[in-house]
Length: 330
Image (tube, rainbow, N blue to C red; front, side):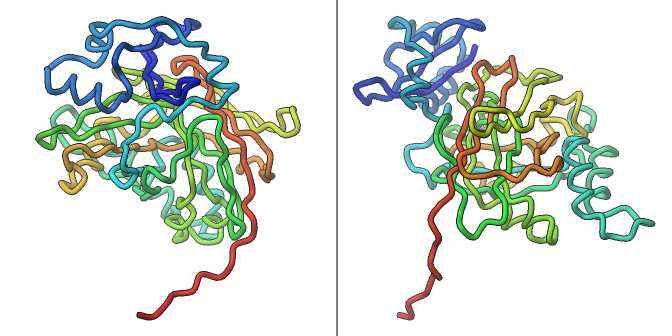
């Protein structure tokens, strides 16, 4: 089962359920929030899928109309954006490690770069045996819920940015339960969207390069992540595809297990505050930047994988030039 959140033509928030590929979403009865459904499932010791089926449905909704009218919402959110933490982990896929290492090629060829040292740590200890803790991955802060834009909406390119490039990834969506327990709602497609030119200047700019908007959805896949995810990521300009790449993920293509990545995020008890939402990007395997693509305002990023239903699509829009930010002394 996959879930979406959307607005009706009258402006009301609703939850839709997709029971099989190609089917129209069914409107879940008396449900306006995936977050509230998930918390109810946890409180009643039911699976989220079982709860949705028990609620029943009030007819279908036209998926194409939701897309055309830009009424799709993020598949999981918090009504208070500050209660949603968006984070990323990198060097989890071989492709991403190769791309990042190319950026840092100025390092001495005789030694492994810091990038490849981190990747090797994952290869050696990122998939520990059940019940044990593996090596921790790279981690970065992405923003709070206000930094995420819904599917079909624009990703902003700041005037001071040096690049605004795609990063197609799998995203884990989580809620913290009433007693601090970590509840995984499911997985979505994501575009982490970063400034790769800035990072290329010096990998210590990684934290800055991640402070950009992002998008995920439109659907959240309930249950476990498939061991192998295959899809495509495309950059379109003026109606034509100017670049495409194979998007691969799942543990078969990763050097860390999902459980290990989850542990090293949620081991910080401050990240287990009841009611909070967490959106965690699991790393990219392919980037158009590595192929020399320079995104332009108006380009469309599209991420698609069959297991996740409809594609995630966002247009890049450049912001007007910003002024110097001054600080007032009190």
